[in-house]
Length: 271
Image (cartoon, rainbow, N blue to C red):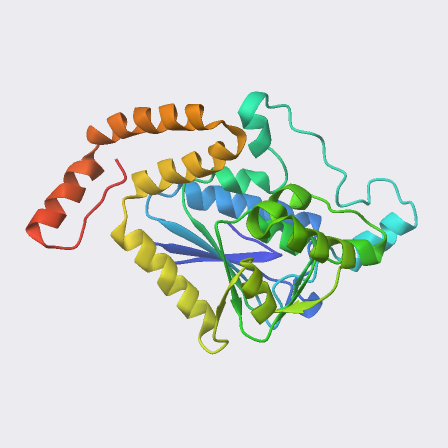
């Protein structure tokens, strides 16, 4: 598939999706959003792909919504607002995964964000709904909304407190201040890595996780963790018991025992 505002490339079992508007610090557009979701869906559907890495081209990760969109919104141009999307029609627990970025929580494969440069606004909203956030040392992060007369959008007011706690979340959202990699890491929002060879390091981490763990197990466990945010303990426990019984009948369970006993690398199929 040919993309304009992103690129997608596969090395081994890792699909790397790159936000690709470096002249605008990869500012978010409607086209970028459509292409990004298409690329994620394609990666999930490809059995040869075990993990997804998201990064930015050039010196930025994502500067937030493109200023053309914000200026049009401020001028009252109809349909210009990046938030103007229809509410999902799904019901029950599925409705929680049908929003702009919450669908990432349902992707069966782990999604790693490699924050190579400044990240703000909607870019941060996307990142908090990914599974792992790595940030290059010496970079900057801001929620930005309150300084633009906006509110905490795209589910970040729900997800951010679950990642860093209410106090840190309120600090970042109300002040919209800029913090560096070290402070973001101290809150638990990201993990810091050296800037030199940054993307390759994140890709290596994704490779290590997926080379040594069953893709079937990864998909089920990820679903368990995020579903549990909407469940009580009894429901989560019963679900775990059901999934454990199902695991006993899987190819990956048999391979998990075999490679351990035979002292060799695993050859999981995901079945």
